[in-house]
Image (tube, rainbow, N blue to C red):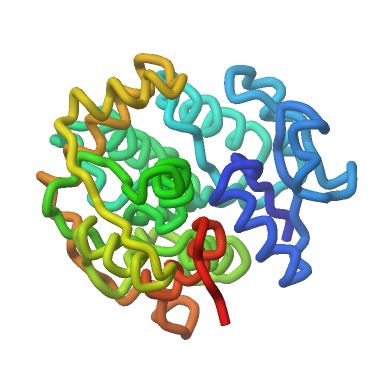
Length: 290
């Protein structure tokens, strides 16, 4: 079985690549250039060059591939890119697409990102190809982006209010995806993936404080202030607005639900945030470890 991982240089994609290596699976990755895939430490023959905007390049990248892992960046062209992948997959003889989406993807969401997930999920379902949808909640690993303010001020910022979210470890998401790519029985399924508990941002701060021995505080911001801060960090206007809208949707769409998907698919319980906090603490200045 030949597997192709798209989005392989991203956070989820690279975790999937690492786990496919561990399983000694027959896989390749798609990248825009060989240089872009350098960090994956793969042989050149495992790297296929393709561009989401260019159907002919996708067809070439998909040659002799049976299963594809599809993850597109948050981007205004995401819908077009998924259409291009479907067209190329059909022409190249791909059998099965495993697509990463988002938990509770809905066409009624106020977030453009979440609506696009739902719309493109439907495109995959209607494609006539075998499919598996991977729908995770947000990731523990997003907290790495908070390290600059945690280390400078002992604070991190968002617009989640007191909403509780069942965040999940990215490696648990990757493990479910790898199962769908390497095993049978996942065809036509949608895997809703969460951690084992729903916590508020203030509760996350408490667990980070416990792990690091430092006082870490969560500061809530209005969406407009958060979007302004993201733009100030260098994000373009569309992406900053899209992320702000998605975070606001998380406070409205009840993302506290928990599922048993990780344990059902992998045979082990998902990692807890307390366990992740210990990992993150090694990057928090002033932490003392025994």
